[in-house]
Image 1 (cartoon, chains in turn green, purple):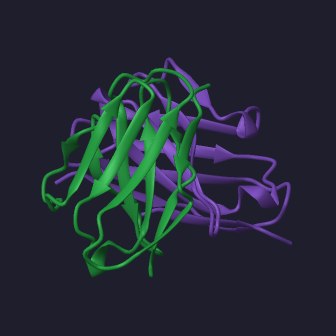
Image 2 (cartoon, helix red, strand yellow):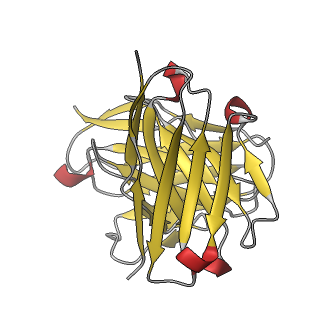
Length: 106
Length: 113
């Protein structure tokens, strides 16, 4: 089974900050990685698929990079609506999710 | 528009059973693998099971093997999750998903006496 290790688990930041979240796979998943944003009581919302492809309608301040086993999600300038929990997911072999990163107001 | 609508959640006693359903529309259901994902209260996302287009292949997370059964009815554009021998740790919101781009809104399953 492929394990996904996401860090940090919590991140305190201010509006306008550049934020980076990292996800590491236990084995190569090529580029079969997605990033989601989730707010309380809501289903996860897809931000990035295939490691770096921006989902339609998602603001361009979100970007993804990486391949193989190391991936990052970057928010170039944090906005008030971005305070949420973020998850990575591999879909190379079955599905596995990272533990999540809660982005809090500093 | 792609739509996935889960139903069948509720309160059930430990050891009991429940069957979740997911009604799909807006795409050719029979052409896609389908999955169930769950999220316990205050916890992260956990993939539960998935099923091939024709139902010939099914995979489960270890914690539900032997207790949960995923199935589908392509004629009814529906996905199911039969959950038996339920435990308190199965309490979660259960999401039906087509792929990374299409998820339902979830249905809550609470296992408690």
